[in-house]
Image 1: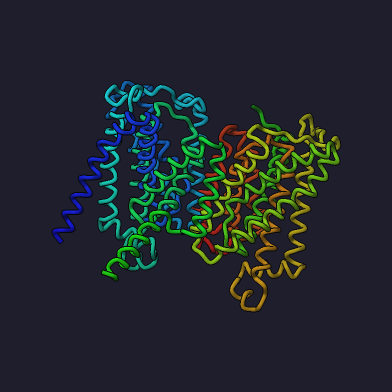
Image 2: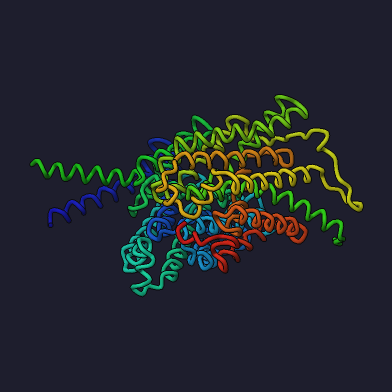
Length: 324
Length: 297
């Protein structure tokens, strides 16, 4: 037991040191682009893990999560560009506006039991938000997007990404910690019981729709945080972050990494961001590559890369214990 | 803007022609669901591919001949592709959970979009009509394209054909039986695998036809698959998933709502459709003519 906690501490320390040293190694040793890529992977990881609260834990197939990512990003960007509101306020506003949108859309959706109906309705709402942002030029600048979002100096990315890296790392870790607590709480357990058998959960006396709605709103909130980070990192946003393919990619990240693991979607996000940058440097047919990869995963490894790794690890462990 | 009666009538005709294209699409979607219990998210991709193929064939053969040939050949080519997709991919996932089925057909959208980009490039394409369909009909001082009438004609013909197939053929009987009680059809010894293939071929044929028919009226572009598929989902939700006549009814309603919605709020006509779908899901979750399959999908 003591041995176990010791190795655990060693691991934590090793990961901590790596995370602190990584940006310096990446930016000084390779190029700023790699660090940018890594931060992008972190933002997507947060988006994917918060999305998984709805799909993986809640069993609700939202096809419209780009709406919350995008609303978070736009709310923060509009506040920063159009008003002189401080960063802290704009940052906090993003997720709350996203959560509000999540509450409205979720209220209409959570009572829908069927996967397909849920997917279509969330997709419809997300397209509605997309059209709205696209056409409401006075507020959102339409398809020109919002350029030159003013970012305070301490996280400015014009010269170096290192401060922004630590800024997003802290936020990412904090959000992941909260999400982990949520998933492990009695609430998280009930959510999973709902996914497994809604009827039984209802018989036990759970107010199923309320739990689903809370999960939906929480997920929208954290997707909004990811959106805000994205806006601050890119300093410009366009309606394409609300497009259906943005909702699609996050589902596919979960599928790729494994939806049954807490960090599975994060792994999927990292793989996808790296693959995307690698593939798009050779060809513009990223979608083809992505689609075929995902078809293969659905057909042959439905538990995702993360699920596969866990399986192999357990096999290795049992075999090494079996033959001392 | 003032509304006079002839103008409203023209809006009605345009809504009707839109409804017919939606019906061509939604009927395929709903038959596949009714028999196979698979929601084909890639159905719009077959439609897009059909439209681009029609563009190529029309230009290849030239003029009026090209257009009519495309109308005949494109659906067949698309249904061959559909057969391949069914045999190679869909066949492996009928027994798996719905989530994986939806994800598989969803992944196909990415593949098809890039295939179109690879073959035709990203720029917009325009298909020209033969002389006979090019003109306008004048109605009390307002004009609308003859082609609207042609689309409506195709829609009515297909609806009649579908009705005949469903009511009068053994194949149609099996489709209806499967939609009601698939296990029983299986137990009675019918080859369900072959039935599924046939149904998917029929559905993609309809999708290809819809693409070929719509091609001259729009600028072909990547992403046109997603536009139509969302509308089709709304149509089948309104009509009732699995019901062909529900798809027809849903298409007629959606077409009119769009046509008149565009008069009221030109840029947000789609919003009315989303609102319609929301109302239906909340108050009549299995659609106007559906049979309560919603709980399972």
